[in-house]
Image (cartoon, rainbow, N blue to C red; front, top):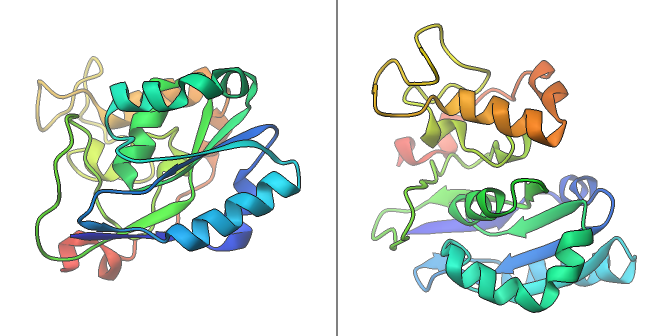
Length: 205
């Protein structure tokens, strides 16, 4: 099991930059998701004209389903500067991969509980660290995407874009750098990430 909880309201409001489209995943049946709180905050962003649309769906971790659900909102998605995603980390990564030219931000943190984790058709994983780093890494998880779970840049062992630990694995931080470069957000790398709280992660469960 895992629990998806909202980041602080101030943090979420600060992420809604420029024209924003909200994508709110209702979650898998085995995942707790704060539907009411997310709906209330989405309405506030719509009323304030920060958000131009709010899409409520499920299983955004499936890119084909995501494409279908967003089809009638594509004019607003195309015009948006930011996609603000209310979901677990897997859903955020799926949106970021599907819309690489958009700034994609996570409005939630994912906290683990023992038990079945559900099924996704993708290779993405959510490290369930309880303090999502996706907002500073272009929607690519440094915890799950780096063999060493480094949060402030790559190690000195990667070579030709491949991981030192697994030669068949792309270096997660190489992917993060390229994504941030494409988005014009390389300055994010100048700000050290907040120290990890391992008590909130899946490793501590």
